[in-house]
Length: 506
Image 1: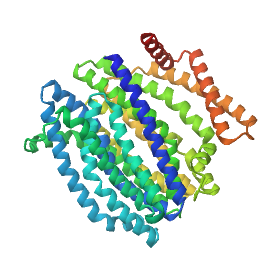
Image 2: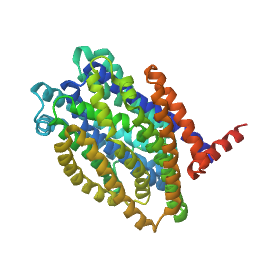
Image 3: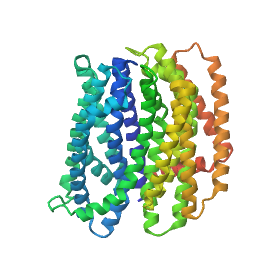
Image 4: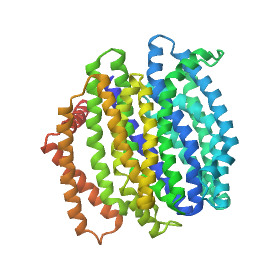
């Protein structure tokens, strides 16, 4: 069982990395064709609201369906339960899709009144196309959650890669003819192809009963679990939308800088944060099912230390290399050197956001496992008010640079509030263990940073890509050595597991 979980974890990490690389390539394509123009602003602004619903379904479904499906399987009702959720979600997703397409012409001018007429038209039609995807996204989300429940994490990631690659391919083929619409139409085609891919895997196994009539009371019972979870995810997207709306008042290019910087800086969170949280989720679910509170708390503690160990050096390393990275990934075609400078400045202020939200991923998994998602929802709703306040204050002070700063400060308050509530709920965590390990990891990162800054002074004339590789290798070696010397528990834990697997393999 452990070896299978380990293999699934490795495959998931690899697939997640491939997914984020695909997403990065998509951003590079947008930057190449549209730079920091009003076209890029319009496309990225239009994607916010449909993406809120997409994440509402995909992430919300995974967090809600995984524990409830595992429970239904143990009761020998898995096939029927999965079929009911699938059909019910299809109906609800179709309704949301139609409503979104109808209100898009009113919504875009309302949210972005400073957009030009051309930008508003692009944003409106792109939004309509994205809302047309929601029906397919709903079905995809159920099947992805099913794969996660079976610890086949990589399959759901591969299906998401299909969507991104479809968008990229459509841009290459049609961007010069139909502009930003090519990306949106490619996304629609990708959601359909992704659904076909999943059905090809699921239908022959007969794990889902779709022939019975929809049992609306059962579907309703599931959505009472799902809604707090999904709405919590949606609240996160509302916070992103708040930032995008404020960016819309900061002149042409601001929405683009915010989006590119956010996506790049949050890549470690998307790769490591979501990966670690997703991998521990089934383990937490089983601990709760077995009523093993001690094992549950140890899982949370191990998740928090592992997250910090992997995340902090990754984020600090990115910050030290940020000008090099943005130049490497974006500065070509319509994306100018001035746009690179602006995006780099924005990226620095997202540091707190990626660190705090990544740690909170682990805490939230604990809430969801215990079916206490409504508590996160209450905290998340409060975070919206804080985010609006911080955006107003910091944008007045720093312009569009205040938007990522607001996100980081809000993330600190949000994570702190979630941690306080969670600790009271589970009866405490081992904070002595957490504090000592966090201190050792921080000292290891400080040693890494000193070495990196020293090396950077000596290689300023080297080619950009060579600088990045040199700094990454030296920084990684110094961090690993420091973590080993300081006997960091999380590092030694990972090292023992890697060594054990190699021994078993030989």
